[in-house]
Image (tube, rainbow, N blue to C red; front, top):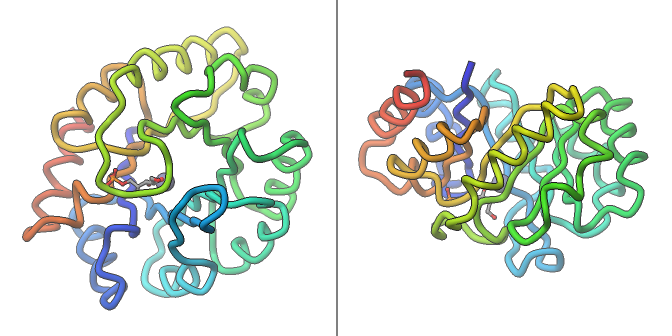
Length: 218
Ligand code: DX5
Ligand code: ZN
């Protein structure tokens, strides 16, 4: 099954519960939470308090993407706040195997996110231990950017890597996903589709959600 994961980074946070309800009733499978600290990425978003508010608004899995320095320090906070899965960046974490084990011990699914300029082959020795490989299709930090053109090749490489290592992680794509690029990511082999502005920057959020869900469900 293909998974649609709207990112609340682009939602109207003054109306979070309502925005989550709109996507939930029209086909969202997970809710993606983008955590930015102004250090690992240039932008600042929100922390565990908002994840906790999202938790109260839905029973859908909360998929937390940590774009922060020293993510180990905050894993417990995000899991207590209600995260069901946590992805940390390959580029930030030195002892990645330890961090992945810690996320699992704390009871969440563990993911590794990889920037557009990091070769997919660099995650070869961690993929058999992870639940999610989050392939960034923009440079992390902001919603509303354009899908980077070599992303399809990178997704295909992730599919190959899954095969050659006999792993079973989900391939998640994040950044610049809209009704055009989602088909490219789908045919390249992605399983989870994060969509921020492509859903929330619309007058009709439910219609957009349904449209994207239908494309990936074909
Ligand atoms: C980018 C974030 C994305 C972002 C996607 O740094 O990780 O999850 O919200 O936004 P769009 O879909 O607008 O590119
Ligand atoms: Zn994200």
